[in-house]
Image (tube, rainbow, N blue to C red; front, side, top):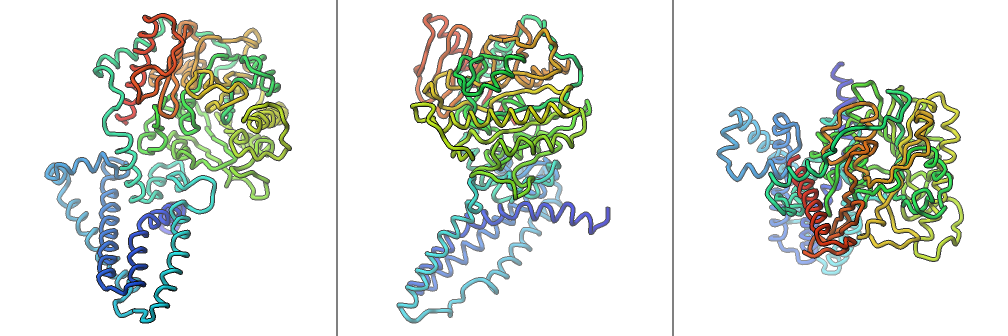
Amino acid sequence: MNLDSFFVTYFSGSLFSGWLLDIATVGYLLPIPGLLITLYAIFQKRLLLSICNFFVGFFILVYCLTCFGELFLYNEWTTKLTMQALLHFQHPGEVFSTSPLKVTVLFFLLSGIFTATYYFCYKKFVAIKPGQQLQNNTSRKIFAAVLVIVFVPLNFLMIRGGWSAIPISDSDAYYSSNSALNDAAVNPLWSLAKNIVEYTSHQEENPYVFMDNETSMAGLKKIMHAEKDTTEYILTTAKPNIVFLILEGFTSYALPNFGGDNFAPFLDSLSRNGVAFTKCYAAAYASDQGMPAILSAYPSTPKISITNQSSKTKDLPCISRDLKPLGYESGFIFGGQLNYGNIKSYLYNAGFDVVIERSGFPESVPDGHLGIQDMEMAPLVLEKIDKAKQPFSYAWFTISTHSPYDISVPMKKITDGRENEYMNTIIYSDQALRIFFEGAKKKPWYSNTLFVVISDHSHFCQRNFPIEDKEYHRIVSFFYGDVIKPEYRGKKVESITSQLDVTPTVLAQLRLPVDKYVFGKNMLNPYSPSFAYYDYHGGSGYITDSCFISRKMKEKHLFLNSCTDSALTKDLRWKHEVFLQETFRDYLSR
């Protein structure tokens, strides 16, 4: 590759993909200089300009130190500058003694040269000169008013990343399956500031310590232990195509086969002709937590989602990685924006070959507030899958069952509760999935495909379960397809299962090792333990066949407890504490 093509393909790609984050970073730095310039316009005090120039110079210095610090750190750690790296400067002698002298000299030299150059350009071409004064008092007030009226909303838009429904995040800069290129595209000061905020708010120490680490680690192994492996192998082929249909916020109480009402008759009919896991529970309450739960068997804790820290997802196990040695092409399709919860960076870090969001479809396709609705997406998804090389593992993440529920069909009065619009979208998405399957059955790859239908999380529904209750988190989960042996079609697995179990179960069917998925179990091994962990904002719970508990993390007592036996309550509480402690311990270790 010559120099010109290298620049176009890589360097310019990172610059272009990250420009919105660059503007957002500037937006965060502007308020202090903006306020000082406004005050100067009113009072005409030179001191205000001096203070403004000081802050600008300080920001330039910090920015250059961050950029070159990250540049040299990346060469060693292959990670962006983080709070964990900065903590090493508590012992600066150690840092500089372990760094080659030429690197240390180059770091300070480049930082100094660029800081001086940028500050010189600022003073010469941008900074207000002390002589530039508005002598008329009325003119000064008008100028100050114009500054405020124009600057405040513009600054807000810069920080937010524009008018889009979802504020800007790291994912807006991600564009490649090469993690180094994505890291280069993310503004270094933005990345560091975000990491510091998350590090301090999520704490550098485990807030969920109930026992010593040795005990909790041994406890998790005990909880996850299966007495023996008698896995039921339900597939007719060792190498099926796999299509994940990840249903946005889809409650199980829309399907009679899962104990619900008949709002999704098509999905219900599929589940009755596949293998249904009728007591499956979401691991958390949001999409950015549901994705790693489904694809990486990785749980979350209250207020924590690992996808929000890109550096922590790079080594996360994922089904896309495990299938790659078998020749699988992996893809993820969504009709909206995957910057929500930083999901796009997680997908790229997980090694997905193809990641398609709203920008990957024609602008002429009608869409709603969040993206292309499911009925319009169904044929588009089929077109994308058609282009995949077999065997493939693709996922379609639906969108229409997410607020603001602006589907293209009129709303009907179908429930008396507040969730009438949501239940209308359940019906709509069910019909969209019918369209998808009608089209899929005509495809040559259909007969060799396993469909994994799973909700990313649940939602308030016509049953009005509170979010703390386990039944709020009960979700749709089933396997379907011609690759399922006839004798297993219609099978119900009624043990307690979780999103965390989906990937280990699929990989086990392909006879692949699943040891790295320490928080998930094989749902088709009858000897796998029957339990599920779930969390919600501010709390979490633990479910077994006998009962469940739910605990608000700021409270010592149990918020909900269906156990009638004190010994059983004690046992569930211990298991819940072990799972929670180990989840956060693993999170901090990444």
